[in-house]
Length: 202
Image (tube, rainbow, N blue to C red; front, side, top):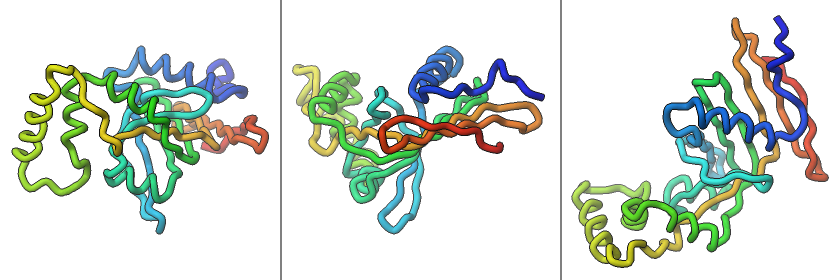
């Protein structure tokens, strides 16, 4: 039943993530960078939603959001989270856990202004997660900002719209096997910044 040729290798988890992510970009029909983001309140009530990975390197994994939204409030109150990538086409998943820190203003500005103009408008017009009495209110805000900034071609980034970087302390790779005899390898960061890994029972 062993399949050592396709086993999850030891070594650098960032390099392994890069390899799997590159394959996902080729095989996933939509949003290979989609990931579940799990956060929790200070009293440990969890919540989860899908977001998009917008950057990654050996410092961590970056996503952007409205810091005044529910997830933003939870992150600011309890700055740790878990990520989950699930690539159904590859029958693989990756779980990532660690603390969060806000990206620099320059990073947030650069990404915000790399977005399509209408996306900038939509984000600036939204009080994300707040109650909305009527969709027409939001649509009116969008139209107002679109008119105001159409000539400039970009919208000033709202100060509460920002990014967060998850610095991984643990990364687990899961590989589907027939008959649910799956393979799991977990990498854990040590106090010197290196990685130790072990296989886990499926």
